[in-house]
Image 1 (cartoon, rainbow, N blue to C red):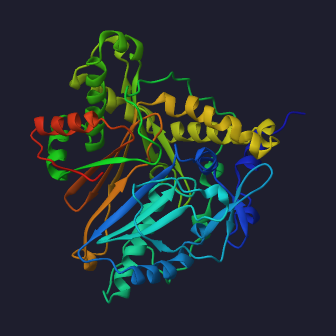
Image 2 (tube, one colour):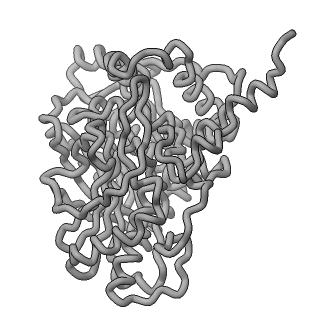
Image 3 (cartoon, rainbow, N blue to C red):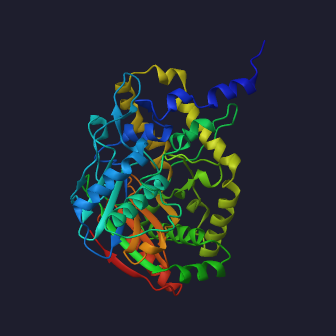
Length: 445
């Protein structure tokens, strides 16, 4: 007799309460975390950064106290990797993370597979509070939630009274079991067709700098000015900026020498992560992100900006659906659940995971752009926090990544690159000014 597909689906997609219980010493790494933990290296750090610029100099001792206070609120972050024969798992620890001084470059490799290192850093630097996370532990939503809790507790220790905490986690709160949820697996479904195959994308023809070195350029503008122009084009702010990014990469491609142009003429795609919690209900503080990849194919000819922005707009609404997300999640989880892969020892998995990551991930996209939306803090703290920003993880093959985050009326557009050439950033911000949007540009490294 054939198996009942509904019962089979329920068996695989359900979360084992004992396995995921907050009281368990070890628990499974989610599928995204598994991939990032395996490819993480000095060349592929898989580390992103959030930071807050404070009105006053940051007192490291107070920040350490705030960190100690909030860690019980984030027990799923008080973990280190535990080595197994087939897979790693997260293992809870009584060790406490310590506040450190700022590294020479942002988003440097965290050697998490040593099993003695926390998968994140907490940094005090002059008037900045900085958190850096290896993506194996959590996504941008989790990282920003942690930073906001850390800032609020730091300022509370310094005597600031907070009446309305809003969505900021408090140190005296008890974490919900739902925050441990393995949401990828919970939403996995059997029988979902594979996502259509896509082919390698155009990559910037520049030589990478040595591993660990990142160059950062920040553009700051008024979010209302950008929204006004985006509205004139009848698109969202994200669609407008994504279209500019694509158009800039197209210009770089078309300005290459003829022979190089013909060799590199491939689709231009932007990898754009999506917080799946916005469409599929989840309170998880672990990874729960999917992505879309709008773009153009230069083999069809040169695209006008109007054509690009229309393609981005319609692509987004065609693919930003719950069914598309479930398809992507199910394909992703099914790969890890492959019985053949499960019995391969971990050290052998490491031999082929990086080539797989290159071919099935980074080679398919030209650049990376993420928009975290608006970061808000309790109103009583607004005068103490001048800004909140995000720096995305660097990508070995993309060579250019961009993160957008709004704080009050400030729209921060941060580029990070692992090449010397800053052509992308120059063209991008020049393009904004051509639309009448005033931008203040600063280069930090």
